[in-house]
Length: 202
Length: 199
Image (tube, rainbow over all chains, first blue to last red; front, side, top):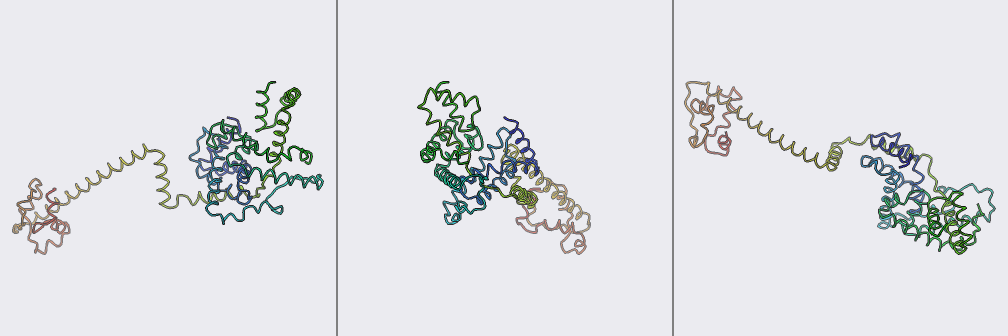
């Protein structure tokens, strides 16, 4: 294991003893990846943050079950994924409660963080916004395990082995999920990928 | 560089960007395999798109909120007996051997306590009867059906049988032990006799 994961394990062992400071360090370190992976599934920044809070509280409550043999990030993302799936199931049972979902897609949403693109022309900005919407839409249409595998791999840099643990499948299945997911994304985003115009927009 | 290495590097880009040396390898390969160029560009562009996805912002007080929730839960934790029992039960379920040992200890302790209580009861009964036997010159009480009771093994009871006071003697009522002991002596056959039989 890497030094970084060793450090996480040490922090987690302290959390097991009830060390709040160690817990705070872990929350600070992993809040962005956890919120991001939940947000990509729920498509609601507020709910993603709320659920991420629940994830970290669950981490603290379940600290006694944590075994140093596994990477902390793997364990954390497994909890995040399980709680996200529970939330999706809850929403499907109570669709009325998720009516506010999607409001974060509004351009006025205060939760969405954009890069500073003050140097971009309005046309470039418009193209970029359109692309972001398109790729988010394409991602959201992927099956959950394909989307999760792609994002954990690309955005969080997790190994296939770690992802296989989180998704509870084999390493070859993870590669297959990523491959199929990327094929779908490429098909849906083909017009944009072909022009390559967006690559110069930023 | 062969096709296998190309696919290997292509797969590597799913996770992270290539270093300069690997990029050079790809450039050389694509010069000799222009049919793979479109695939490579699509993959690269998709990676860039994924990297440029906007991040959902996180409120500045996120960490503090989580820590506060956890701190509250910690302080509130184990404040009720019910939660303590639940916590204890949870620990036991994780360690069945410990649970079994605890159950066995509890069972043995229960049996020992029960035996001790019975012994105390017997001793108390014997003492009470001895106290009664201290009164002299009183008629032997009639214990209906007592001949059928196998109590002869207890000398205290035998002694009491010979010297018991009549129940209408007011002096007896001054001694609680005596009253207590008398209450166990039936004047007729009843379920209380079962207790004596066990003595």
